Image (cartoon, rainbow, N blue to C red; front, side, top):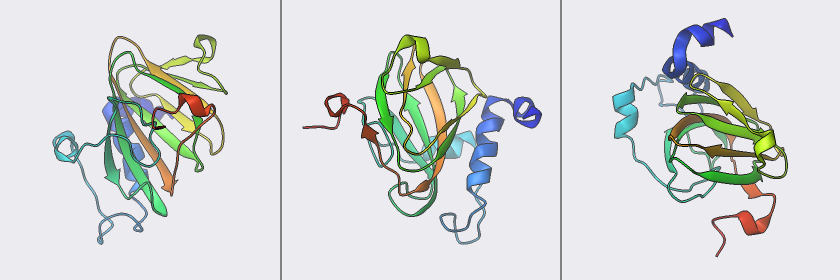
Length: 166
């Protein structure tokens, strides 16, 4: 844990990414992957994909693997200010590092202020498979790196809260 604190926010995210990259199942054929911030900025950005909330304005970048396929994956979420993500679950266990901004995160079946904890850059949290969780941003955007073993999905606790519904 002290190593993560000393690594700083960006370093902690890269440590998490490096851990995900140790499996050759989804890594380049050599098993080696090195991405600096410029490399990550050059990767394709998308909206909703496997394992994302589907909330408008959130940009998702796949850093490693394919979240919709079997095997390890890592994604970067860029979440705009004043964004709310309703309570939802994923089928896989996931872990995450806050890279920038403040990410307000909580566990439970509804996104309520009293269950949110502010997570500053360098913070680490988990999203256990099948356990409902939710998040918000405040006045600033947040960047979060999430890793898991796919395939992943997103299921909202209340179907009416799913922004992907027709």
